[in-house]
Length: 178
Image (cartoon, rainbow, N blue to C red):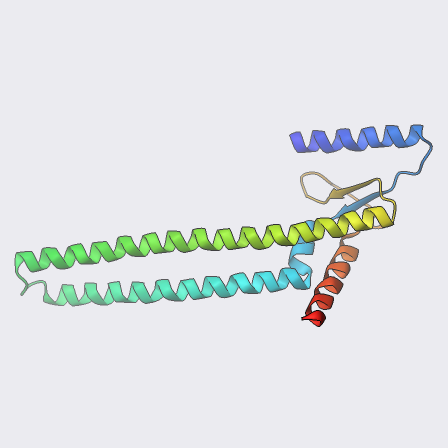
């Protein structure tokens, strides 16, 4: 709600200022979610994260199989094991289970950290592109399109495709230089 009030106030004050200066107000709208998901760089980031998730998932599945195998072995032999041996095996199974949970939590934190790094890096580049567009094309205001904030916008003010196109061009130029 605060964000809405702030954006509304900025838009309102911009309109007042611009109308008093008799200049034309030029507003743009960009959907960052689309830019992140439809740009080549965004798709590459998603692919990289998916690879990382799959790798971690495979590792967790292997650990789970070891625990399951140990538990099955224990269940088969527990009737012939001594009390101490049973207790040792149960503790080992519990320890491996806790280790699996800790590893899963660590992987989750690691993946979240990597996702944040990639997103922040990409957002920095996207914001620079948006600033360049704003300066070159004399925009007074560019707003991020979110469902909670913007209920409608004319296609005339939509610059998302332009941002995606420029980001893709930069990406291909960077690949060409490497």
